[in-house]
Amino acid sequence: MEIIIVSSEAVPYVQTGGLGDVVGAFANQLALKNHHVYLIIPFFRNIRQNRSKLKLKICVSALEVKMGDRTFSCRVWKTFPAPNLQVFFIEYNDFFDRNNLYVDGFEEYEDNGERFSFFCKAALDLSLKIKLNPDIIHVNDWQTALIPYYLKTWYWNEPSFKNTASVFTIHNMGYQGRINRSKSSFLGLNWMQMRSEEFEDQGKINLLKGGIFYADVITTVSPTYAKEILTEPGGCGLSNHLSRRTIDVTGILNGIDDQLWNPETDPYIPENFSRKNLFGKTVCKANLQKQFGFEVNPEIPIFGIVSRLAYQKGLQLLMECADDIMQWELQFILLGSGDPSYSEFFQNLAKRYPGKAGVYIGFQTELSHLIEAGSDFSIMPSLYEPCGLNQLYSMLYGTLPIVRATGGLNDTVEKFDEENLTGTGFVFDDISSNALRNTIGWALSTWYDKREAYKKIQLQAMNQDFSWKNPIREYESVYRKAIRRRKDWH
Ligand code: ADP
Ligand code: GLC
Image 1 (cartoon, rainbow, N blue to C red):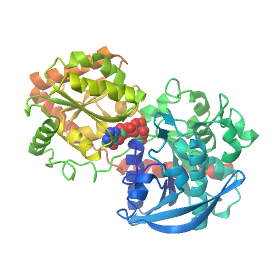
Image 2 (image 1 turned 180 degrees about the horizontal axis):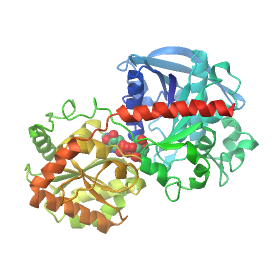
Image 3 (image 1 turned 45 degrees about the horizontal axis):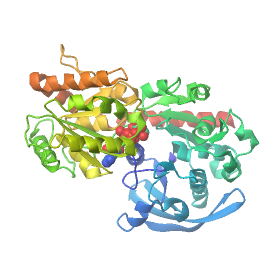
Image 4 (image 1 turned 30 degrees about the horizontal axis):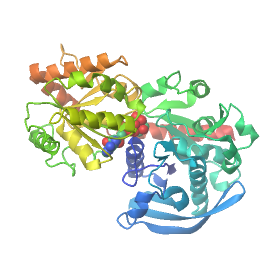
């Protein structure tokens, strides 16, 4: 198939979280299966800065994009990283050459509606300009949610889109792209679309909502999350709207890039390791302990966190019991960026417990790999988690996850069963700091008192298969379904 993927993030070009990991790896995997894949992302500042390293070349010097009564002229860059895969970057510096992707300090950029509606149209105009005939346009999250609408309205009569089906993957219902109504004509929305059946949401334009209405099929990133978003609170206010499309919603678990995240080959860690030989893991642990000024001692377990610092991640549960946990014989490391109220708390914690709690605020890929590799446990107390990737990386690196049973965490971590010695991690249900504290205590006592059991579940965790093999097959079948839906719509 000829497949266009449109996303605001893709590794190795730009990312703020898991969306980037998933889109980047997914595009590669589809290309490996001989589909013709065209990935389109914005030319954000860090991509501009790395354009020579990334070997980008200008492929269209003036692409005209009409938005409301204005016409924008943009440039398009391109690279060809693998057979069957071409990546395009939409350059419009007023919109994308900024410090951050979506937020200015703590607030969303006021012109996110203009920025991302422009990006959506530019992606479609690029497809026309370079004469693609896509079977599928696969869009991701609110940033690209206008594309299914544009395809069925403004572009309905374009011969090359006549049979193009749209697939909308929702990576997170918590971010919907709520835009001021006054932007409707720029976005190309008419009064029809401003009904509550389509884009209107409490007086605003809700891009995710419109995407749900217009996409031929909808997917999300784990089977449990697919169920959770059909009711509240999982639907973040849109469960009724989404329920109208229940038969078109599928949950497909994310895979991971086993080139980037593989303890046997990981280039970021000081010593590689495998299930058969865990020596490298002790080197990583010692390295991590040194880096954070902790006692270098393989007997003291490290509990690590790599996370966006956002409400969704349930860090407030940890904050409430942090002082209790710090009394125990363990070391704690957090790498994260985001909401300053969390970063302040954890930076303060590190000051109060030197040698025991270590915190790094910022986005640091290399350190994230070292934490996954060198820790003994990882903590993800998420309030909700569409899929979650860190628990997958943790398991493959022999770091046992401590998670709340929600969304993808529920689908991927099997609770340790002390009697039968089965499972791959420590799981709790309640949204309460007590439940989290008890579960960390359970993990800690397993470490100190039942080391053989710890080692057994560690190997079980490392044995899991989180490759893209099955997910890609499921997406291929979703693509076929989307094409059928598209025909019905004709
Ligand atoms: P989400 O997409 O909700 O942030 P995921 O678990 O799906 O959660 O993915 C998070 C991804 O972002 C992982 O690859 C993780 O390693 C990475 N990540 C998050 N915060 C940081 C950080 N501060 N530094 C480096 N990598 C980070
Ligand atoms: C979102 C979700 C996360 C998921 C990622 C990739 O950011 O919060 O759970 O793993 O997207 O799909």
